[in-house]
Length: 590
Image (tube, rainbow, N blue to C red; front, top):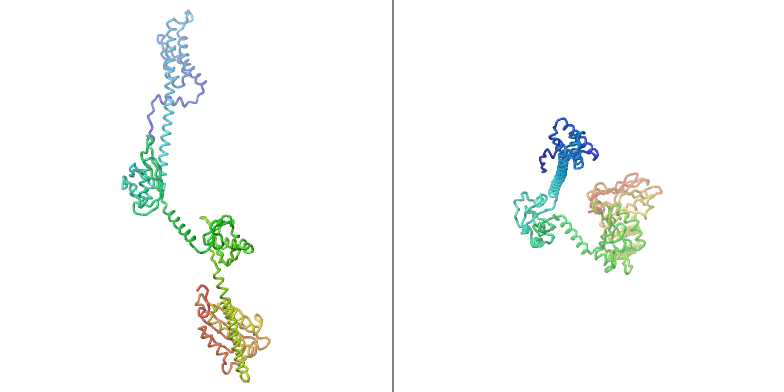
């Protein structure tokens, strides 16, 4: 708090005179006028026995108010005015000699008084200036103290002052909050190193000992708050010098780095994960320049002992694929947030292609701005070899299966040869074996795992007419299970054969429409398949169902676990199959 001092009357006069904005000439003129006025007053009111009485206070006042120069002028004018007012023209020396002596003494005394008064005035002026400076300095000190107090209260760092024994003597308000101390008196005088655990305790004691010797120390340690919350701290300990320059107290500033420490530990875990991974892990800047490859990545492409800073993303690919990466893959990553697909890396020493599953994703900063690209790429050489081997085995299996079917067909033909009524049976058996072979071709192409419904229908029906003209296929993509594929293909063969003999395909205008639809979601959806014939001859229901009709209804009902029905309408045969999608097909995502 700034305290004001009482101001005396003389101080007020000096302050008033100092604040007067008068030029030096004006001061001299005013001093002259005042002296002349005093001289007139002396003539009118003061007897000749006291000629200098009024001039003394006037001259001192002029010196006090207007300064030394006007005061000396007033002293000289006062002496001269006194002599003038005392003299007579008929006196040979104007005034008696004793008056000349008195005037001289008056002038000398007044000059001394003026000099003394002027010095007093200057001292008062200096004192006033010093007082103003002191008040301003005190004001600044108060503001500085308030600012520092605000900084200490707002700081999230724990700022403490210790004595040379390491005991707490002060803790900032912000420090009390972060240390969960409600009343500093509860911890005042406690040994500061006792707050630290394990190695942190030894570090704290060493830092106090170093500060006593005038050295600064810093360390990272773990300590609990006053309420027992464990935290990590970065601590700086330094000596506070006394008036003699030697350490008098110790300053300790502790910063809570718990979250930073957790982030660093998490980052270290990811670094160790990346370094120990067998996948190719790399990062590059937006201009394509590579700045990180893990050891597995370097081994994969033959860069074990090479520097990677001079490499670009496109250097890892053959020229034709490098262009695709630059023009398609990286823009897709920026646009869609990810890209994955099979590509070939090149070996940097042998230039041999390396099949990989290349997965690229964006790297962004804290504001979401793209700063680079990351990749986790898997070596596909073993899988590619396994797939090649599987394709070779499937091809060999398909070839041998066709040979077996051909042998069966030949044996059946030879067995039934010469029996007139068996000729048609032999022909039907051969056609069914061909249909069975077509279904197995589709399955072996997918390693007997699944078959597309549309492809199975195309293979089974293409021998009976031009697809898209007289045979219309329409429906979504449905992947049939392998166990139902053969039954479905044989059923389509029987339907197409029946249509070619008796139905829509037996004339030149009829058509067959095979449609399928999925109603619902996931594997509980309903798969509906409809075979519909139009434009053929009139249809009449058969008196008895033959092998083909039985094969269609019973096998499909059994394999599809659904409802199968044949309707012999006059305008054309209609076959409907309805089943649960999960019983007949492979549902994506399951």
